[in-house]
Length: 111
Length: 279
Image (cartoon, each protein chain N blue to C red):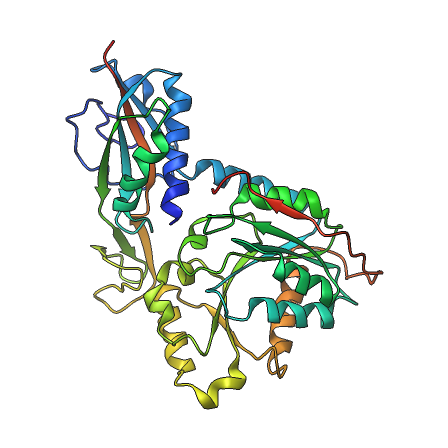
C-alpha cells in the first residue's frame, strides 16, 4: 500500500500551495505503468485529506498512455506491460510516456 | 500552449486532454503564468515523489562524498536477506567496514541477528509502512555514522511491490528471490525487478527439493530488465558467494574509494529508529 504515502505526498504538495484556502479539485497525471493503483490512491485521498485544505476536494485522475520507441528499429508503439517488446522482436525499448506520477493542478473553492 | 513542450495547459476543470509526454527526466517547467482563464485553477506540475527524490539525491551525494557504497536489498519476506547479510558480515568485515540498516514493520529481531554477526546495525521500524523511504535512510545514516569508504547494506521491508518506487540514494538496488518462491515472480512483480541492477537467486542448496527453473526465472527477469546480472547462490553452503563478494568489490572500486582498511568492529548500543508515522 505505497499508495497511502503517495496520497500523503499529494495532499502535502497541494496544501503547501493552497496556503490554507479550501481546495475544490486536485488533478493528477498517472501513467499507465506508473506502478500505482489509482483506485487505492482515490481510497486513501479523502482519509489523509481530513482536516486539511484538501478536505472534501474532488480527485481527478488523467491517465497517460504508455508509449515507447524501439532503439533497434525506431518504431514508436503503445505498450501495456514492462515486459513488452517491439514488433520487430527487440526488447531494447525506450519509454516515452506512461510512468508519470504528477500533481497536475488544483482548483480552489470560489470565494 | 506551453512554449517549451507544446502541451495545452490552459487550465480549467473541463480540460481533459491527456498530457501525453514524459516530464520525469525531461524539462521541468512552470505553467503557472499560462493559467489565466480561471483564477481558481492553479497549475502545480509537481512530481508526487519529488520530495523523496530530492532527499534520495542528497543521500547519494552525501554517500558519494565519503566513498560509501550503499546497497538496497529488495525481496519478499523470507527470501534470505538477513542470512546472506550475516554470512557476508562474517566473511568480509575483516576487510570491509560495513554496517546494516534493517527495515521491518516491527521488532528488532533482524538488527539483533546482524549485531550478533558482528556488524553495526540500526533497525528502522516502519509501523504500518510498507517500504523504506529516503528520509528514513537519512535518519538512519545520521544515527549509524558510517565511516568513510565503508559499505552500507540496506535491508528493505520484505515486499515485492512498494519498495521498488522509492529511491533511497543507494548505489544499486538488488532483488533477491529464493528458489522456494517460484520462478515466475519477476513476471508477477515486474516493477521491482525492472528497477533492480542485480538479481540474487538464493537458497540454491534447496534446488533438488523444489520445482524452480533458474533459466526460466532469469528469462522472466530479463524480459522486464534486459541484461540484468544474476547470481545464484546459497548462503548456507557458500556456493557462488564469491560472485556476490566480487559484485561488492566492483561496486566499491567503481565508487572510487581506496582499498578497504581493516579495523576493530565497534558495536554500539541498541538503537531503534521509529518513523513518527507510516510514510
